[in-house]
Image: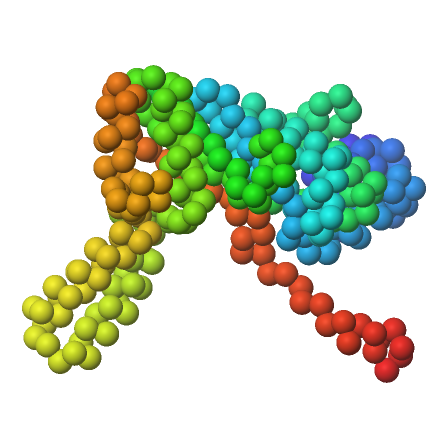
Length: 307
């Protein structure tokens, strides 16, 4: 029997198991949905799927780089304890390496062949959920590359080579000395981890955010009772100050505490032997934006006691 995409989708929604495993299950039982659920249960995969409903906000960020290309991933688990497991750390390293080899998207990475298992990354994660006993999910991936230059990386709060709590990639274009460019790029990555810029330059900022800031500054300035032309200048001054806070090139470089990052790149060019342009960056902070479930211990005890 031909297994349609809609059948796979329905089984996935019913069990939470990965698409490849759902397709295999349906093929094994000639498309019978309920039998496919039972088949997945016998393989321990449906059990793993139940765990997939639990919030995974811990885990690790991993980076992999090679010359002018680098990738960063976030692999989540439910507890920090699992993140310190050697098997989990190996999973992070291997997935980061696969994200580097491929196009870098979550979807492409999940369907990549996991080394030495004959499984996809998605299937390997499901296997790990069953073995480790916690929900594990590949939350996001990103990659950067340049034609001439380097993509430098930095991992903050690292617990081993290339894995930790914060991962940063910085793409720099230059025809200068690669080793010196790499060293400067790492410094910029460290700066990003410390200061959390929103964009490389003001043109790349989300204009909706800028306009919201402008609206707030305008209302505050109007309360001063000053003429409109003065209010306009006050608002523009606040906007320029905002840029210095959130735009990478306009921020004071934490490494020297004096120059802007843009000026630091100009100074680095003298050492590198050619102009240096910071073109892009990616920063993954573990668990950023995930709403963690607050555990009420007293309520849990009361529930167990039947109150």
